[in-house]
Image 1 (cartoon, rainbow, N blue to C red):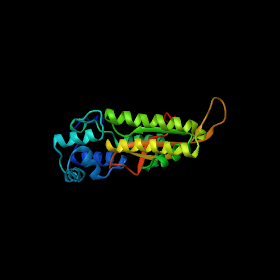
Image 2: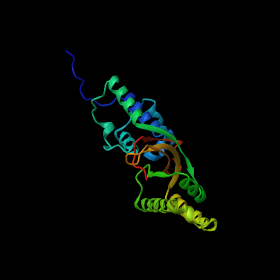
Image 3: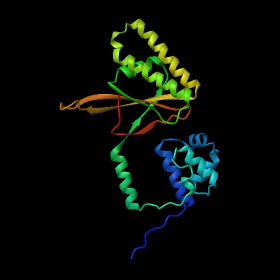
Image 4: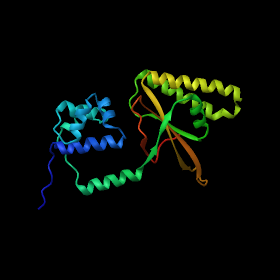
Length: 224
């Protein structure tokens, strides 16, 4: 008879593997994780070397990764088998894609991006403070309205649009938020008609100075 595995605390080596995987999935460097978690780079390095981590260190790391339970790394786990892990990884890869992203730095650039795509998915990669959330929402509303009627603007009028977008970008940077963008093609089906190809623009808000070069996103998402 096979004995069912019992929940147990993670070993330092398992914490190491979890932290490294969570970090690499987000395309963060060890320095970025240290800054986000409030730990020293040396502490992050020690954890990823398999050294023991204190209760508070594990809690800080769980908070940095936005885990629902900040004590998740301090509690007993019923660990999955290798087969279950492989199945979960395969499922994740089927449901997600990886996109390259680059910074958005000017209003003119953002205007060009938004008018070159038929749809967008715009969201923050972390919990924004109230003021930053309001500024980001205002920016989204502004460039979606511009996208819908940009062909009605004269070239002179567009200069004002570039300035307005730049003001939003600068305001977000003052609040510690930067923007990055990526693109993908999707097939959109309208009613019973044949699928139509469309370009989707991803505008993602990151902590200033902690922008990744890639993002992982669900293949199916609510796109506007």
